[in-house]
Length: 119
Image (tube, rainbow, N blue to C red):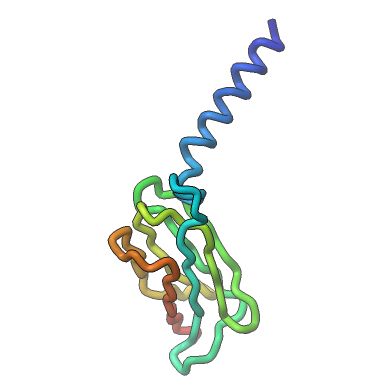
């Protein structure tokens, strides 16, 4: 009887993942979706290493994060073109303005600079 419960739990987990994952998965037509790239800069246009970039699915509120390197660059590949996303950066308690990537913007690659006041 316990193995039957495990099968049901595994099926439920798979179903939950397949429902929640589409916002960051491939499109229905099999393409890899859109790419969000950008940089995190301070007010003097210098990169902000170790800043954390937050990407939120506006519909499900699922959040992905990216810790930028020395060059301040970030990227989020394979985003669904049918979803709005909000993106912002944070460093040492300072937060950039939130920017929106709209589902109505049909570019395959979107680039957004996020500015954080580091002082």
